[in-house]
Length: 445
Ligand code: GLU
Image 1 (cartoon, helix red, strand yellow):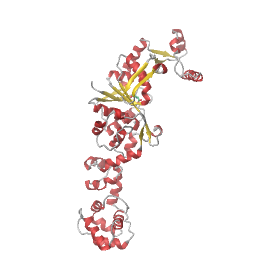
Image 2 (cartoon, protein in one colour):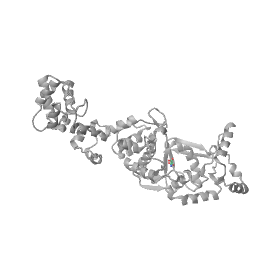
Image 3 (cartoon, helix red, strand yellow):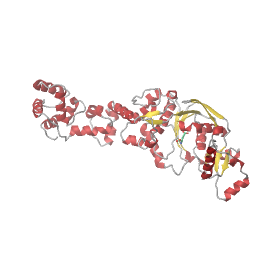
Image 4 (cartoon, helix red, strand yellow):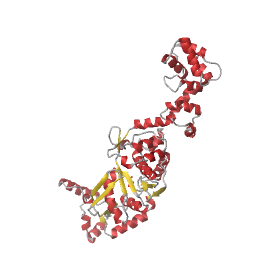
């Protein structure tokens, strides 16, 4: 059996870290099992879905490197959904209901007051043709509910273990709204059948849906796939992320300068028994992917951890991997500069600060004029090489007796105007003899 899985976002917004965790788990699972991964756009809600959001999702997936083998779009498939709905209607499994939202609300309130669960009472099943005609004459349009069998749906969840949902305690789900549009349930099941999904891996908000969907799979003549429901992400404080998801969209993270593999490394591992580590390729994550490692507890998404991973990746990023990107950022950076400063960067764009330090003009910070004058006097003639810093600082040490921080800090401050930064051996070469002399003379250069 070839594994086929899908990531099925609705293009009603940009995808965020929560969605991407689902996408990533599916993609890694497919790769791990030599299977196929589909991107399915669940765009049956034509009011809220836009082409722009669909393109945004495609862009975000590409940036993360989450490549898929197959694509599908639900808005292309209304004829198939209509045919499936007709089949269910003919079998009496999809029935017309005429209650208004207010009437349904009132029913639920009455049930709650009587201490009953707010499950739909199925009174629409009792309607005669006359009753229905009367409603239609009033201008009411039906919405359509799937008639659940009232049994127990059971499956061995790939993440949660054995799950059973008693569909007698669940309302018959509405599959088609009064305006004729489909809710996600029927199209999703039909697509899962027709595209041959072997596994459905999604968030735990869908556990009850899976119970009802198993019945719909069977009603449509399909075999339910295996299910895996992962817990939600929460923030570092343990609180839900829903209010912050805007700033945690992939688009914002990219604009904030995060590396795609920092995002992937974190999302593949939080909430699992594996440690979170900076990985440079998705293949490494594939090799480590096991759904059974995912814990039942919510996964903590900590932006500080993301920053840390990002810095780790940048500290080892070879020049070839960043050269083109620096050019598109209009930054003129040599390999020597990149290698000299990468360990001081949290984001690639931070390099602008070091370009400014190297190329100037900067204002040197000189507290001890005498010391710096002596240093200038001892600065080797000619071009700077890898040895220049050591030869020079040894000579200053010898001449002044200064050592350690009191030797290095005044030189750093005079040459860079800063108290911290990359190794002076490399920086000195990059600053070069001319600017170094000017700065040591107190000039802005
Ligand atoms: N479009 C659905 C959602 O975003 C898909 C859920 C599923 O994976 O079945 O919730």
